[in-house]
Length: 91
Image (cartoon, rainbow, N blue to C red; front, side, top):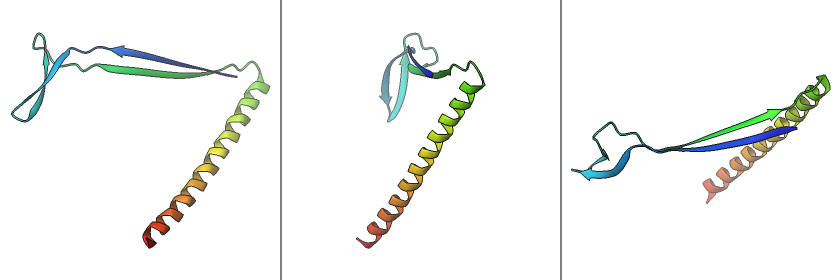
C-alpha cells in the first residue's frame, strides 16, 4: 500500500522587524542587506510499492475508483450549490 511522508522545514530569514514609515511598511535587517523573509517548506510524498503486474493493476483500479467517487461528490455538491443559489435569489 502507499506510504505517506510529510516533511516540514523552517527557514529563518534575516528580517529583524517591520517598520511603518510614512505609511509604507519596510523590512529592516541587521546589516542593511536585502530582506529575506522566513518561510516554512512543506514537502509531501506518497510511495507505492509495486512488485508485479497484479500490484500495478490493483493500484490503478483503486485510484480509478477513488477518482470516480470524488467526481460524483463534486457533481452532487455543484447541484446543491445551484439549488442554494436559486433559494437565495428568492429570499
